[in-house]
Each structure stands twice: as structure tokens, then as C-alpha cells.
Image (cartoon, rainbow, N blue to C red; front, side):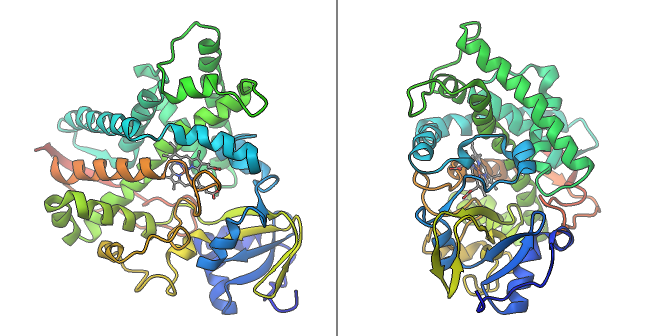
Length: 416
Ligand code: HEM
């Protein structure tokens, strides 16, 4: 592997912590290369790759596997153990079909109706308060929506704790120290909460409405014909409920875009259908959420003169791909109209992963995310009037996952 640039380092983990989303892009720029080798995760050799062709090989199942790719600390906070993210081959496809079976047009319609209802209920309360923090409110709204949609019972007095826990698991992924430990605690508490509910459904003490995620996870049979063990069913139900709460982040980024690029607000008000799609796509491209994805080499192969040897950890630079000047004109400008010309490649726009939904690991909830964002941002622009007071809306590229510092404070809210 003499031809690819290598970082002369024992371990670059500190650089990763201090450069965040720009860790891979900075090095690609420095080395003038879409591939380089470094050391991470306690000195392990890691190959980082970027670009559309890199995404194409990353999603080639002959070349890569996910087993053994997620670090333990990610499994103990964000992912949970033995979930769909860690499976390969037939087992993965079978499990992924179950996830995708929840994403029918009918189920999407129900989700959108719930989303509108919950925004309306929440907004009525805001009219009587001086100010709100949008990110916190959106997390609670999305937590209510997620539980209603998934068939998970949620008592009013639980809402704040559950929304905080679901959000803290996400907030932990790039953290060390207290933010990471909060994520682990949140995982433990959520495991107990959801595990108890599935147990009650299985022992007929609780009804799960057919077609909901709760029903599906409780009664789904794996390839061996057996029900999922309780631990895995819990992880998979949380793999639905938790990321719906994650959409609150994108909604907050959407509100920020409306504020920072005021010309977009009127377009969204006037043409919410067509422009709404362009706007939401640009929010997902422009703002940082997932930094990179990891997989391990399944069998030896050569790409770009580099020998990929079995077992090597490889990171795909998803933030960098969404901002690559080779793929996007003027990538650091927020321009929703650029999506009028987007050809729809599964490998050049990868905020929620790339490739195929069933055969690969691309996010199961991408359609949901897009629709919930459209609905929520249409609500913000068409149904609400509000002021945005002076505040620190800066986004640190070092904090992963990113969020505007003030979390978007709104004042003087009126429902139109
Ligand atoms: C996988 C991002 C929302 C369910 C993923 C992946 C990313 C991602 C980057 C990994 C892709 C890969 O490993 O190749 C996001 C973002 C979201 C979001 C940024 C928005 C806030 C959702 C929603 C759901 C969902 C709403 C479900 C209701 C999943 C599942 C997987 C996944 C089940 C694992 C798929 C697999 O391993 O086959 N997501 N996601 N996500 N996402 Fe999402």
C-alpha cells in the first residue's frame, strides 16, 4: 500500500475529536486524495475514503461487512447491541424487510397526520409563553409522534424524560465524558421501558395495534422461525422510536436556514409542495449530522491502487461527500434549487447513507424523515408567526452531533 497517503501517527483519535466533521475532508484536501490511511480506535489501521465512487464500493456487499464494525461505545449508546445495523447478508435482508414493511404510503399518511396534530397542540401552548427553545420543543413533539405512530403507550408525565433519553442516545455518538455517560444511562432506561412493553404485549397484558412497529417487533420471526429475543426486539423498536426523535435536529436546522436565508421563507410559503422537497433535501445536504460510516473489509480487493485486506476498518466520509466540490457546485452555499438538477444517484447525496434500502444499510427512515420535515417546516412557515431574538446560532463542527448553540430560541409566537 505504498501508493496511498498515510498519516504518520500512533493514533489520530485526538485529531478526530478536535476536527469533528472535517477530520476526513481536511486530510483529503491536504493529501489531494480521496483515500488515505490513518490510525484510530486504539491505534487500529483505518482507511478513510470519500467521493461517489468510494460510496459505491462501500455499499458493495461482496467487499464490505458490518459485523464487528460498530465500536462498543457506539453500541452501548446510539445503536444498541445486535440490531439491524450489525447484520450482513440474508439475515440483514430479512430483518430490513421488516423495517421497510412499516414504511408504506398508508403508514406514512398516518405519521403525517399525527405530526400536524402534535404541532398544533404544542403551538397553542406557546402563544402564552414568552419564548421557547425550538429544538427542545421539537424533541417532545417528535417523541409524542413517534410513540403514537409506533403503538408505544406514553403517559403525559413521562414525555419529558422519554424525549430526553431518546435524544441523549443520539447526542452521545461523538462524545467523550459526561455527554457519553448520559447517553449510556438513557440507553439503559429506554431498554427497560421498551423491554417491559414488549413483554406485556407477548404475555397478552397489553394490546398492540396491528400494523404498528410495536406489534411488528413483538411478533416478528427471524430466519430461524423464532421470535426475536427480548433484548433484540427492544433494540429494534428503539431503532424506530429514537430516530424519529432525531428528526427534531433537522427541523431545527430547517428553522435556522429559514432565518439565515430569508428569501427561502417566502418560496416555502408560496410553493410548499415542490419547493418544500428542494428545501428539505438541501437542509439534509448542507447541515452536519452523520460524519462518516464504518464497515470492515469482507475479503481482499484492490481499489484505487490500494490493497484492502480482510478485516480492515474503512470509514466513508458522508459529510464530505455532501460537500464535495467535485459533486456539488458551490457546496458551501445553501441553494435548494440545486436539487432541480440532481440526477438522484444513490451514491452522491448520502446524509442517511447510500445504496439500496433492502440489500444494503441505507437508512430505513429516509422517506419518513423527508415527509416529517416537509410537514413540520410547512407548519412553521404557514401557521406560525414568530420573532428570532439575538442569540448564538453558531454551529460547532467539532461537536458531533452538531446543533446550533442556542438551539433556536423563538419569541412572540402567534398561531395564524
Ligand atoms: C440507518 C441517518 C432517521 C431508521 C441510518 C444510517 C444513517 C442514518 C447515516 C446508516 C446508513 C448505513 O449504515 O449505511 C439518519 C438521519 C435521520 C434518520 C440523519 C434523521 C434525523 C431515521 C428514521 C428512522 C431510521 C426516522 C426510522 C423510523 C434507521 C434504521 C437504520 C438507519 C433502522 C439501520 C438500517 C440498516 O442497518 O440496514 N440512518 N436516520 N432513521 N436508520 Fe436512519
